[in-house]
Structure formats: structure tokens, C-alpha cells
Length: 304
Ligand code: KG4
Ligand code: ZN
Image (cartoon, rainbow, N blue to C red; front, side, top):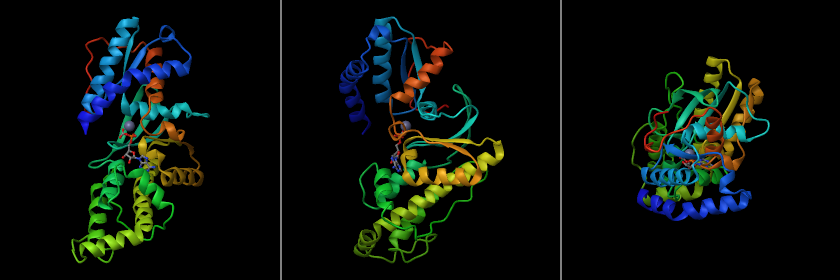
């Protein structure tokens, strides 16, 4: 509901900034610059944030810094001890993006692999929707997966290079459920009735979630393994909302231990969208005097 999201931003931005200032014990005068999310995202929400940031920068006579949301997710990894050193690889997995990013410096990043269709977060959320779970379904699938076993084998897509695809997985899960778990995951065979389908989901929810999660995680980690082989870089990070997933966190640690990588996982609260990641990116841009003028406009699209 984009319109409701932007209205909520407009209502909350002043109280949130106020509370942050009180908690930090700082005065507005002590702040060096104002950083805000310029792209990508829902345009209404971005407009509220950018307009507020501009107003504050103008009123306080402070420089303004435009931050890219996906770059900020990657740099959330610098908010941990020990933090990765450059260069490192980062698997950035959120509701809208799935990327392998090669980071040479805080402000020098290259996307070396990305999804050609759905994002990993969408794969979780769309599966949850098929299972009748509320949005966002990723955290719920994670929770149910802990109680189940990955006994159903969903196909792993064959995509060249470092790119990802998740739309085929979604389709095979749909066919599998339409067949109430009896049929072929590659073919439409509407053999089950609505009641049979619902009963199958109710009785096997934990195993279905464990199987879906296991496959999404294996798709992500196998590409990451390929990226390490290609680049020779063995410091590996994860970022974005899906990096909160317990299967991915555990899988990355295990793969890293087995293959001699140094792995980094941001603290849980810095994985999903947060303001600290915007601040840390703003800090590195500040060090480079990378400021923007008042005519800067937010953008819904990616352009990373
Ligand atoms: O980065 P984020 O908070 O917002 C975007 O910028 O998109 O990511 C949100 C995504 C949603 O798709 C949500 O289902 C997913 O992250 N997510 C998870 C988990 N926590 C959040 N997916 C799987 N397991 C989780 N524990
Ligand atoms: Zn995000």
C-alpha cells in the first residue's frame, strides 16, 4: 500500500528524529551532515525522507548526502567487530534485490551477479502467500522451517554465470501444492481438490517450509561459492532482509568453515531496513566530501 506507507512516513518522521536525538544525547548543532535514502524504494516514502532531509540541512546549514539503499545494506557489515576489510564480496538479499557485490572500497562497488526475475525475498514472500501465510512471509517460513525437515526436493535452476533466478522455483512449489505433494513439480497436474490441498499444507507446513528454505539457501550459496572461485576473494558478507534468515546464516558459516573463507554476518537488527546503515554510508561519503545540492531528486528505480 504505497500511499499508506508514505502517509505513515509523513506522520512519523518528526517524532522519530526527535526520539533519536533525545536518545543520542546530542544536539542538532553537533551533527556534521544530513544523509538520506535517495534510491531505490517506494517513491512516496522516499519523497518524505528527502524533503525532510533537505529542510533540516537547509535550516541547520549542513551538507546533504544522498545514499543508495543497496549500498547501505552492504556497508551495514562495517557495523560489526571484527568488520571485513576491502576487498570483500557481499550477497545482498532483500525483498526487491538479489545481488553479489564486489566491494573494493566503501564507495566503490560492482554488481557481479543478480537475479534475472524474482528477488530471494520475493521467493520467500510469494511462497508464503501460496501457503496462506501473511506478508512478509520470509520470517514465518524461517520460523516453521526450524520445526521441519527438508524432505521435498525442489529443482535448482540452471542459470549461467553469477546470476540468479527464482521464478521457476515459485512455479514448481505451486504445482507441487496443487498436486497436494503427490505429483511432478515440473508439470501442471491439478489432481488435488482445494480441501486436499489445504489438508496437505496444514499437515506438512513445517516440512514444506524447511524444503523451500533449504532450496532458496542452496541457490544463493552455490552462486556465492562460484563468485569466490572466480574472484579469489575469500572475505564473504551477507546483507539485506533475507540475511536475517537462520538457514542462510547457518549455511554461510558452514560453507565458510569448510572452504576456508572469513564470513561476516551483520547483527540481526542491521540486516532488515534500518537507519544505521544509511548513517555509516553517509559517514564514508562525508569523508570524501561527496555532497548533493538541494535540487537532488529521489528515484524509485535501482541504478546501482
Ligand atoms: O531489506 P528488507 O528489510 O527490505 C527491502 O529493502 O526489501 O527485506 C525485506 C525482505 C522481505 O522479503 C522479508 O520476507 C525478508 O526480507 N525477510 C526474511 C527474513 N526476515 C526478513 N526472509 C527469510 N527469512 C527471514 N528470517
Ligand atoms: Zn532493504
